[in-house]
Image 1 (cartoon, rainbow, N blue to C red):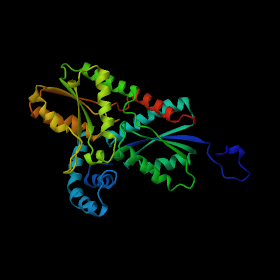
Image 2: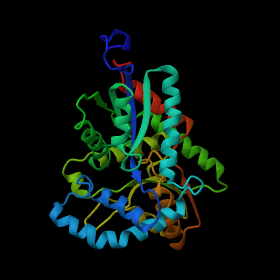
Image 3: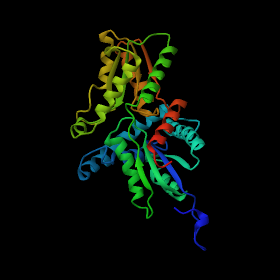
Image 4: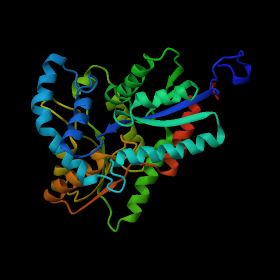
Length: 344
């Protein structure tokens, strides 16, 4: 892109060249009421990366039965963890805060970087964010899906949405996508330090730590999705960094949906069985999420805690995600710089 002073006489002004870094997270409803939840769930569950069924078969089921019943249930779950001060979901709050911290670090070193954030589903939309970046003069763009472990149902669909917007652009920027960081030593160290700090704040000692990752239908894994392998490596590296024996950290999968088999072991079955095995003091962490959301704050910290105590457990602790921790912002800034090699 030419500098403005080099343009021919009478040429419309052009913004100076910039490099865009776009952090992409899953998504959030705008409110907890029925219609807000229905709009969000319809977009989410209509994604072919999420539900791999023929549209003619799936949409009547989705738009009929599921979206009649599920919005109320999901709205209740969101209401329990909603950021009432800002009237938004914690995921939106934290993703914004993490982006602002990451942007400050990056722009202090590289002033020509523009850092923004967007959601795959809901607002702020991916398309709007990319349009802002192009309008601001970004001729190169790094997409950073905020998922440490790769899956087609998370990382790939976030990139798909960005590519859909780029298909509408006459003048496309050059594009890169960031690699997942499930086994990066600095990321594992941040997770371990968060566990150590949380354990130090307790007046009791957990017998076991459950590393709970979001579930995935087993058939997706059978088709070649590497997600299970990435999760297993994260859990193993975290345990090794903590210096623990194998029985002190257990991997599990949460949030299954529908009648099909999902990745196992299931988190709910795992935690209900622990008191009967003598593990009555349990902690949970969710290393598949960059930021806390309804799946961690409501499903784990509230729902599974209740199930554990009802099954005979005595003490339960939830170790928060890294969220907008300064260490995670520094990691994201360093990751962006690494991925921008040759452009900066």
